[in-house]
Length: 284
Image 1 (cartoon, rainbow, N blue to C red):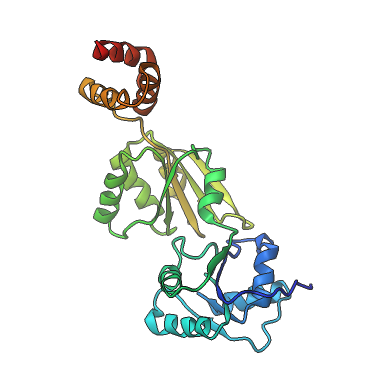
Image 2 (cartoon, rainbow, N blue to C red):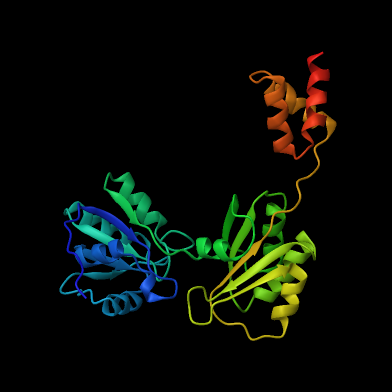
């Protein structure tokens, strides 16, 4: 397969790579991998395999390892390539670099030094899972991996208990059931959730239901593969009369009574007519 060789400006190019199906890579990502002066990867073996699958010759170009444990020396080496006017492509083992994957410190150091930092977007397990989970996608909070310990997981859940967004986590298959049990203790049996496994791969699976039903589903199974867990937001806490009055007074400083009532009713999930009548009372 022939890939377009493009002239890349000197800089750092983050390249998203498939999370499962090798065909999910973008044409632009392949062009960058075919054209970059230097390729860096979280897993060089996985990168070599990806290049082979898509017929991208590495030639005599450097292929360097860079991951969470590489540290400053490895970053400094990549920065020196940028200083020499080279284009550097970086890819994590799968998915989008920096999203629960290495790359943040490299990105920061390169941008702080004034070099071009850009991205060839593509696969992400977070976005893929949100599309499949059947939970609201208007607002979501990605927390990556929770702590391994039971107490750490519970504290993590407690900190997110009032978050009005779909919660998204990565989890090890070995800890999935224990994680779901801890989630029940914080969110309750009936909170809706989804477990997405092996996304875009041959054995892709999405299980939806209450946290309690998901525990039942996975308790007696041998679980393998990459896991994304999504948990629905809870009902917003009812606003007190004092909270509504404070919000209305602030809103009416810049908005009409009608507009202020609409904004506050939506923000607090309270009947608009009730809020409007309160606004009229406050206006006097």
